[in-house]
Image 1 (tube, rainbow, N blue to C red):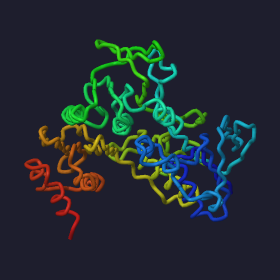
Image 2 (image 1 turned 135 degrees about the vertical axis):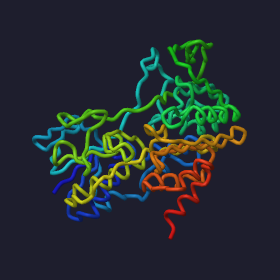
Image 3 (image 1 turned 90 degrees about the horizontal axis):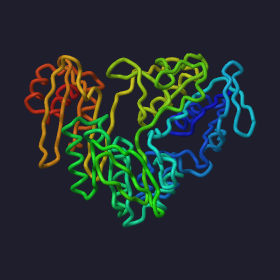
Length: 411
């Protein structure tokens, strides 16, 4: 039995490891199209700061790790996939057959439709190759624009600021991290960053990029142009569905509760998979590492023949550390139709909490500066805890979530 995994990120690596545990004699092939060993993109900011070298980003740091597990690792790009023949073609012309296939091809940065984005000095922050360019072009005192204050942008924001550069963040929405924070919390985060010396321009679009006298000039709508040494684009990602072929796709490759695609012997996991959303019951792409790891393990269990490994749905959960201020969003943080909500807002101390209820069940939350509640909020939402009289207590004082959790989950 040959299992082939396309994609050497967290989903692919965890899937390969899980398959090996469950199927000691199986042939397992892990294919990644980058020259480095499998690594975590979420570790790149720590590399930019200088806390770790490139090897510190590697998912598994033991020398010869994959070889010792009997996992064949190929650093090649897949150019063609034939589901009918159960065969794929690599960029060197070699063909590989498979019995079962996992597509863990991840996602790629979105290229904004702005003139000049192909100029030298315009980079993403997605790969180790990107990180090398950022390190080379962002020395202390350099001027840098970060285009996009979403989840990816805010992950790297602190790493950039700590390099001693003059950083300007440009976000077209009216607040930072608009897909995980509401108007109050997103605005507070902006104030926090500005207090730390980062210039943040919200409700602002980059309209073009030019090159003058060896520097880039970032054109902004309604504002003066900004000359920079480097422009980093962090405007979102999209699933790598190029190999999907006739598989059912929407935003990503659609999978069932077993992470199985519309082709029985083909599975999908991680950023490329459109799986069940725990909160809504619908299907969505959740491009976050915890979901990728969960997907990889479940897909591998089912590929091995278990079939009892059922995906109950991933919780939409994001936690960010932005220059020392922790923010988080959980579940239906924007609220459910007909639900109740409560808000605690203390701008002076950068503390914020918003809880969303459906009947007496906590279904979503948005927090800023309240780290002690992260696990509790996720637990209450994931367990669909019926709060009873504790709902009113939380409406009166949302900081009592720990008490509510203990009242329902500790005998």
